[in-house]
Structures are given as C-alpha cells and as structure tokens.
Image 1: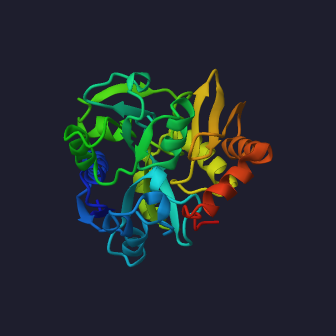
Image 2: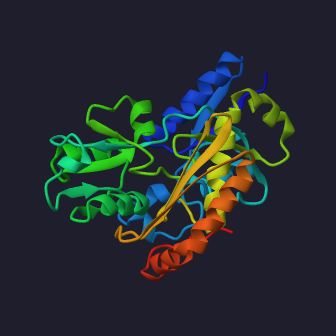
Length: 311
C-alpha cells in the first residue's frame, strides 16, 4: 500500500478532520502522515472574514502543496472550498455529513428568544448575523474570530451573551457543553456545505482517487452539490449572507435557501424539490436573484464587504 500524505490546516478542528480521514485510511492498510500547512485565513485574525477578499483563503496554500507533490490529498471543511476549484484539482470524496445546523451557545440563556434587549451576540458570519437580525432586530452582533476553543473561551469570559457556531465542529470536538439550542434551517439556514468534509486531490490522479472512493457518501455529495450550485449561481463565497440546506425527503432532493441583507431588513426564502442536484440549486438561485437577491447582494458588496473572488 502506498504511503499517503494529508495536507491540513493546523487548527484543532482541522486536525480532528484530518485524523478522522487518516484513521479510516489506516483501517484499509495505508500508512498515513499529516502535514500541517498554515493558510492566509489562519494568519488574518484581526479582520472580520466578510471584509477579507482573498480567494480560497483557507485552501490556497494547501493546494500549492498538492500541486508541488508535497501532499497527496487535502482534507477541508467543504464550506471553505470555492464553488469553482482552481484548475488542476478535483474533489475525490465527500464524506458522510455531520449535522449541518448551527448551534446557539450561551452560559445564561436557553434560546434566542430569551436573550435580553440589545444582548451582545458573537458571530463571524454575515449569514448568521442577517438571520439573527431578522428575528431579533434589537440584538447587537459583533465579529468573532479564532478557533473553536478561542470562541468558547470568549463566551465563558462574558465577552458575549451568546455566540453562534456550526454544531458539526462542536460535536466533532466534544465541546457541546454550552450548546443550548440547535437551530432549525427555518430559523438559521446553514452555509452551503456546512458539516461536510471534502477530500481534494490533483486532477487526473486516478490512483489516489481510486484509493479514496470508499470515503465518498452519495447522499452527502448530492446534497452539497445542490447547495454549491445555488451558491455558484448567486456568485457568492462562504462569507456572504446566503444560506442553503439540501436533504433527501420522500425520495426527492429538497432545498431550502435564503439571501438576506446583513441587517435582517430583507430576507428572501425559497423551498423546492427536484431530482438533479445542479439543476435544483441553479433554479433556486435564479429564483432568488429574480425576486431581488441581486439587489441585496449588490448592496452588500457596495458597503465594503468582500466581493467573492471566484467565477
């Protein structure tokens, strides 16, 4: 069996993900090593993500290591990957998806409705901010950067009354003590690809692709392909106020999606079923743009948020 080298970011969650994939490969008899690669996104910690316009800021350096042959595969949170990969790369597998929903975390309050007037809520995402503001316009949202431990520590210290994080990361790290409420897609539509891991390889590396085939989950691939098709049609990156959540219901793929103004004043929703993931996502994107999503996104970018640098 060939030795496989995995490229990964160095955060606790990224290393959990890389070690998870590594363990699955070792069961198959592979020798595996993990190379930690520091990305642009890891180095920029004092600026809200929505203000950063760097394409693939959590993936570019890892892809360079892939292209140079220093690593054979990369393990990413799928939501960090641009919807159009750079030339020369492909997604070999999307693993079984963890719960894609967001989690409301707090020391003193059991749900969003219980927060006092003008409570301080930490979130790194315009998508989360917009949906919070839509149901609680009085809340004060503040940027929250750092790894999971850093964010939870700031909550424990009382910097925030509550924070919103992806439940998948908290669950994977076993850090669910402060989770008070798992937010349904109707309340907080997740980011496209949230909860899913993508394994990226050099395009055309059929030998490595064949070794990774067993990791690919058809349901996770169909759902996330649909979500990313919507994101691609809207021209958005993972930091713009767009939400998408697809799942199989009664034998059909069901997609819920939103486009929202960051202040919550406008929030467009769509819900539809289909069989073809790309067609379903693209049609939902078209519908949201036609209903005014184009104006919302133009206004977002004109206010100084990062225009997504991807096709």
